[in-house]
Length: 552
Image (tube, rainbow, N blue to C red; front, side):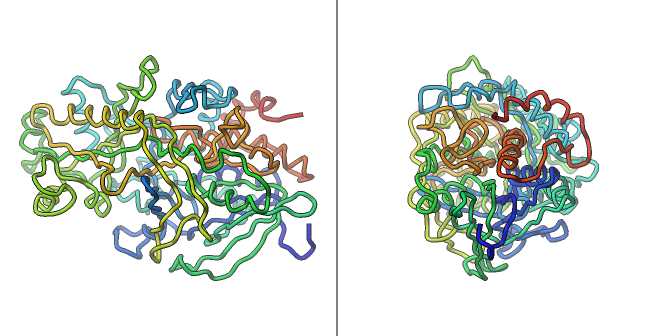
């Protein structure tokens, strides 16, 4: 390494689930860890209860519009965990045997539901994940459960990372939780990493990676202006022996694409096989009178529901179609979801409209009833259709506005399989909610803005086949030893459920291999830290698995 450059043992790019988990374990094991985060560092008191331009949510989100697919993700210290709805289900068993578009198992042979369960346990312990009971669900969740039951379907309360003793049901958790009820990484892994000496630098956007003369890495970054993300306030370079990439599935492949000129050829799968987790939304406009008649509901003011804005994010899901005996592309989950005013009211469409579905007189009429809306979130099995084109000059997208909005290089053309799965899930939602006149339902179709996702996956996925996966089964970038990818990019395909739990479990699973790679580079680091709060039961469960995650 050069004598004048800044040095660290491990450089972590991004501070969401993939970055924070790696940073904590490596710092706790004795490594010098530096975390570069593109977004600002917002504390709980900074989270504002409004959706005005320039408030905390526009600072904490990154909305990138691609060709056929838009990505809404976190852009702050804590990443997606700050703005997610804390739903933490485990992926169904059949997911790990999916073949997808390549006609053979996508996941590495070493990863299955059985082999991942101990790592899921670790995450549950660290984030205090617990299944809610029916007393915890929101009005919207209860209505969705009642509608499912009325239509002959089942519904289940979700497992969530929420401390219900602190939750005030304000339904602002998508803008960050002021009450620290939501178990974002700001209240567990990241404080624990800091306590062990890790350094976190906000507003540092990594541009590319190059090599030093002795085979280590140089990470090149720009410092972003704290109010206008289009402006640059400086730049720099840090040298590291190990690099952990966790910038998110919309940014990690872009950084690697831009690094190819410096590092050499990237695996073919870098920037390919992107999945939006098969996501789609339907908005139902509930008939309050029919809801009262069908379900006997009454809030005491003559209204049965009218509570779209009260509660928290998803609390109830229907998993009837998560059946491994069904053919691929016919399996999906249906989850009640609160999508806040702003994007939600803009993108919702008018059922049975005679005129335009997006705007106009009929749209104004349904907006008057927005408290009686019920939003259902579908997660199907898509075909990993997304491909990233040439990277922009800087960053992960061409920044359009001062904050939040960019134009990206992702192209997504849904296949017949994906379109069919969306149509089936749409039909199921319509059948459930329109039964006996309960509601009128309209999907957020792709006609105007294309598909969209809040859970981007798979753009640098792991696998056994070098032709169709960028990472090996330990999350190391093929042909680039010492670079690991631990964010949603590594997940091979759509999960049919919320992916945070699986991303976190895979990150936990990757750490022993990262520690071993660091040791081989001469870093004095060990593996074996407890959960961030000191709990050790999860550690005991994974110790027998370590020999399969390290290599001699």
